Length: 135
Image 1 (cartoon, rainbow, N blue to C red):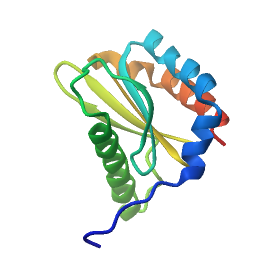
Image 2 (cartoon, helix red, strand yellow):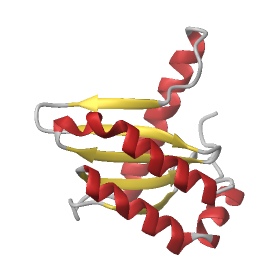
Image 3 (tube, rainbow, N blue to C red):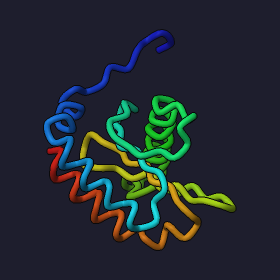
Image 4 (tube, one colour):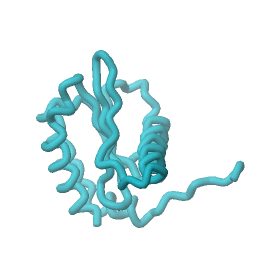
């Protein structure tokens, strides 16, 4: 409905707050796989943690766009009678961005050089480690 405001599920935000240091340390491992930028958000698009090179980027806008893209991909798969996507990949000439679900209440966007998709297994292991902390 027009004019309604999405209210974040604070249980998921609070799960991050309780384990902030541990989660941030786990996420830092992503840099070792060629990830140049990452942001952890709630399903509703609330930014929680990240490392973004472009300091002029509006973190809130990026978070909302990321949640919207993952949600649209999940809806499209649902219409096709397929399961929720493991990840959504956005490629360009000079970079690739990967959006993946982290447990029930979080989404992670990572970005790096075009060969980053080859690291999806390692990225997924970090996602699982983070998800275990956010239950």
